[in-house]
Picture 1: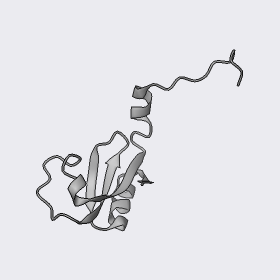
Picture 2 (picture 1 turned 180 degrees about the vertical axis):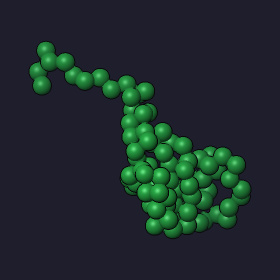
Picture 3 (picture 1 turned 60 degrees about the horizontal axis):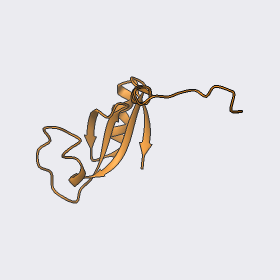
Picture 4 (picture 1 turned 60 degrees about the vertical axis):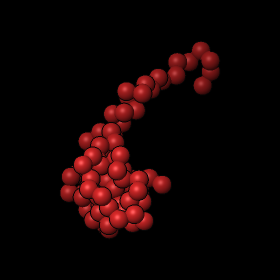
Length: 85
């Protein structure tokens, strides 16, 4: 691409809506990390590893102790699960 060619501009708002309604993000997290991500979550034993599923915009969808269940939750909602590390 040369300097005279226009480059596509992607705004933060565009990025915020990327994958909306089609993609869900799957992430393994420690129980200590969940408090701010899942509002109203009761106290959970520290040191647990759980699987969290989030909508493309970051909204929490579900929490599971089994990766397969989190993936199934995405598929049940017609979302493509994408793993985050």
